[in-house]
Length: 289
Image 1: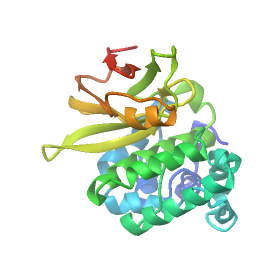
Image 2: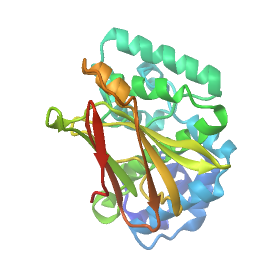
Image 3: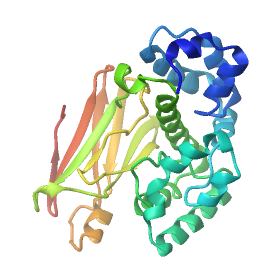
Image 4: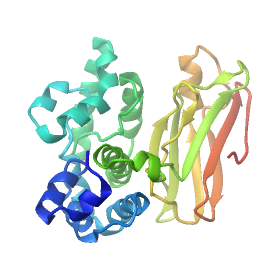
């Protein structure tokens, strides 16, 4: 771990080497090195996001993906990108808690994903179980190639920011690492959080609804990182779709609505929280805080 001042004062070569631990895209690293000095941890996070979303191409996204081992293939951590292996291992630690059947299904899904899209499955794995990641990859396998790349690049940047927080001292305390958009689901029929519910954020691209992010609610029914830190939605209309069908099936319930899609409008950079209150025969929402 180094301080922000140390990052600012490193040689270009040493700065490149340090930032490479966070993301291996050469375009992203070089532009980050050139953007120094950063006046604050917040500026660092904002620059990291701006460069990723505004200056990097699809080729750069795919370049970044090569810096990760396959989810579930823990053995490759020892062989590939040794300088990030400890961080990646910690990020995937929940995978090792899974049963053999789940791990095998996850590895098979990874192979299907790579065959379809031409790159490995990228997901911010921190605090996610193997079963949760399996549900996410099976959902994303339904995406078209031209859409999935934008979902994967959002996940890549979540990982980059997590690693920046491990590289730069005090980022977690001094920078805003919150997501522009968060959500949670509450099952009012049982008075408990709706755990393990798949949620897809969609935006308009070429006048069609396209997936931007796919997540799954945690034990509190929440997704706190729908978007990476520093990533702001452009003003406009968006849709958040809650997969209630799978939720009810997994809980041995029969629901009337197979999904709940909530449209909302983003007009500024303030925080947007989109909650869902559900029961088998109805649902409601409001703008939360």
